[in-house]
Length: 299
Image (cartoon, rainbow, N blue to C red; front, side, top):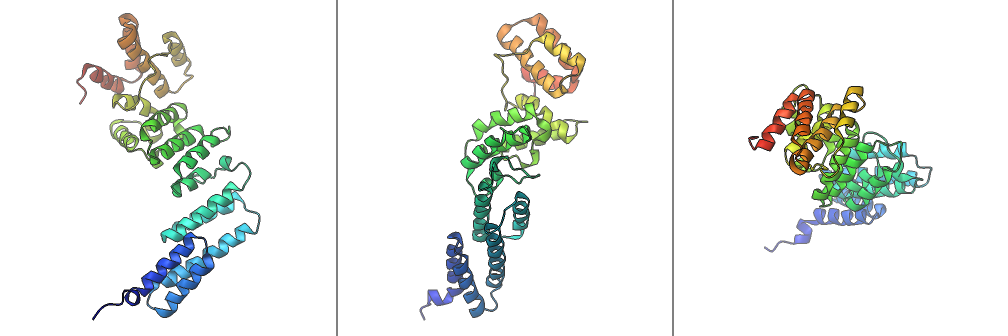
């Protein structure tokens, strides 16, 4: 007996049609189709659950579109979206949230911790180039955390297929403002691996401190470059150390830059020895790793 594919798969076919209506933002047709499946197939839990979800979210979105829309309300909706697992419904809600947020004044400068920002909504929609532009625009605001948005810009580049170019932005974030970097959200596999390696091997350094040391560890691991053409002056570094004007990891990275400049470009052995003594005094453990690397004995 030949199977009637439409009859045997009728419920799934109708639900697929409902998904197409959803993606076209035709909530009423999507709901009508789901209700048809629910009525014809009472045991179909997917149809019953989807009917309820479509009703709820259609009403939520309609209410926002007809009233003043505040970022706090959009953030609340985004949090509630975590309970939506149906991909087409989630996608259309996310696109609607993007449009609603974009309609607000200075949308790129709106940020509610931990991650409510237009750039993140765009990432969720896989609009990576637009997400990167939104994060970059946020950097123009003096009120937003620079390290956080530099790293998020790099995340957008990584997800968009430009991971190699993103490395320099991660480095900039770690150097300029490591305390605000959203380190557990990082999307670059090599940066994730570097952070894990540093966390496991940096005894006595808390997680925030680990992030500040990533530029040094990244160079030791062959991931980050050093600006060898523009090294800092030794006297200035000594003065900053004595005055405690700069964080130790940043100073150590600059000493590392100067040491490598003296070793590979200028060949000033006398000053190089002085720089190395200072590096060792400030962090003997990492200095040992540095010497192992340049001698070729580091595992």
